[in-house]
Amino acid sequence: MLARAQTFAIDGFQTRLVSVEVDVRQGLPGFTMVGLADAAVREARDRVHSAIINSGYEFPSQRITANLAPGDVQKIGPGFDLALACAVLAASGQVPTARLARVALFGELSLDGGIRPCQGTLAAAQGTAREGLETLVLGAERAREAMLVEGIDVAVAERLSSAVSFLKGGAADPLPALRTAPAPAPSAGAVDLSDVYGQHEAVQAMIIAAAGAHNILLMGSPGTGKTMLAQRLPSILPPLSASEAVDVLRVHSLGSEAVAEGLRYERPFRAPHHTATTAGLIGGARRGWVGEIVLAHHGVLFLDELSEFAHTTLEALRQPLEDGRVVIVRARHSAIYPARFMLVAASNPCRCGYADVPGRCRCSYRELFRYRQRLSGPLLDRIDLFPRLRHDDPQMLQGKPLTSSARARELVVEARERQAARFEDQEITVNSRLQAGLLSEHVRLDEGSEELLRGARERGSLSLRGQHCALRVARTVADLDGSERVQGRHLEKALGLRGDAGMEDLIAM
Image (cartoon, rainbow, N blue to C red; front, side, top):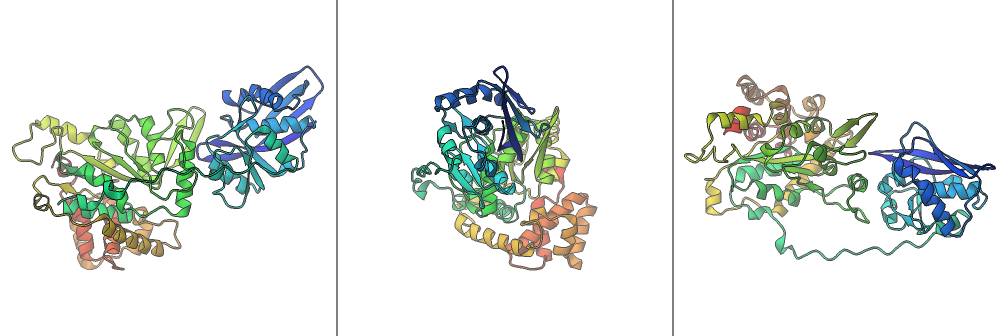
């Protein structure tokens, strides 16, 4: 007898419907599985055999052939167990097939018949809705994650016997109680921009970066507040939208981290150490491995001590910064992940850190040159803002903060709302994603501003990409100013924060 069950193959950010076909017929007892299955899937034969027997059902003493279709899609992980077990029971006449055709089953089986959750639950739920299936049957632990997807029913089954009962027309197991997290500590320990004394130019640059989702590099000697300022960026960022929150949850459900039972609207903030490898930052250490830039999707990637990262690691950032995605290609396999993040980096001006402090730098010309070469021109060209933090900043010495996080966040949210209204008919929501075609439409300069931009080009301080970056930043400055048109003062501010002296002087200080 032949029976079919539906499940999903999760490969990176892609989800493919898999039809689990099981044929039980007379012959020498055996369990053959075909369909490009990896080791974890092939091991399902033993888990399914024990789970069926320990759940009180009969495992067929006949020849069993299981096909995971389509055969050209790699099947990875233990999420096929539940579908395999139910298909075996249906093919042997122990489960009716009527309801089986309308549901998707996703979960790993323990030897005693319990159902464990699997990575990629949210992706499986979205696939269930996309394929027009009515219900997703899965374990209890990550059921609330699947319930975030509209248009499908989620049936909880803590054990294989519960899934069989549901397929026979019974009720699903009750949804487990929502785990409550401990109450957050009082806000006295929360970081705030009012903690930053002085460095007004850098604080303004950080607000501009948050308003337009621009990439920013903080340059300055040790102790000037680069890391302190970067750590306060999340306090001024707007919350995630509902669709962005679902995207972030799906990304994190692919990783090994525990995910929240509901949507969280705080933007991700990832801060890997400068010893991180290329695979750790980009992904691909093993199949399905998600890197830091993917985990920072819709959020912030903070790279402290940027010049200390390996050169090859930094160069791998160039394509994701440009395209908002990362393509990982390995032998016989490729995967595409979203990576639309805001890069915030901090770096010293030289190896000793005091190139901008008269009389304190001990680096030779050769050391300065080698340090400058750590950051390539193409990488720097993808960064929009280069504020300099001074050790002798007068506002810092007088102990005067520029603003608070609450006030800065209000400005950022208002600017983001203006951008969302402007790009209502576009696929973008922030100025940092303005491409050349849209720049000419949304950034129209007067004669004086054109002359200012022309002068920067003639001095050699702007490439064509750098010019586009400056125009995008100018558009954000205008949004913060409440201006519909980009004016000369807005472009002047953008060019000043980009470092009109040129890239070489910016790095060498």
